[in-house]
Length: 247
Image (cartoon, rainbow, N blue to C red; front, side):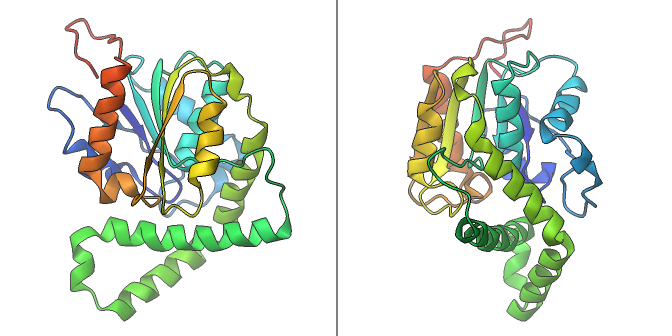
């Protein structure tokens, strides 16, 4: 199985989840150019092309692809294009989706900007992990403010462009089995929007964790892992491994 991280996140964000997966699963986490500290020069190419490059670097087509947030949207673009590098079973965790009936307005823009600032806040706190308890709250606040200033308008506009464009994706062309994993406490993807997204794909199912926020896979890895396993029990992965490993 392969993991694709979100904007201003890294491959290491998948460690809590990968550590609680079954021992016969073989996770590989991609290091994508929208990692923390990037300069956003990669924006000259679509995010889906960068994800495709990452898949090209593997020694085989993966059996399962799990993607989060910005990475999930990159995966959605490949799915809608029928890209054969994408496996037949995928999991989208908290993608950035705008239902077609949600109009892009200045009010929506400002709400998205506030959500983005919250995501930077939550992402940094999530990456700090157990170190967070040892840090002075004022130090953490300064770290978050510095991170938000570093990301700047380029980071936010990158996300907002992808969010805005998602309403026009041809979801009806997706042939893969898809699990859309959403959170009741995620300010970006409401359960209603997640339902619209899942309903637009022929072979998609929706799972909503009422206590999940945007970084549920890192904060509640055991629960997320159980939902992944339940989905795969219903939608078995056809393995490309000669030895028959499931993922």
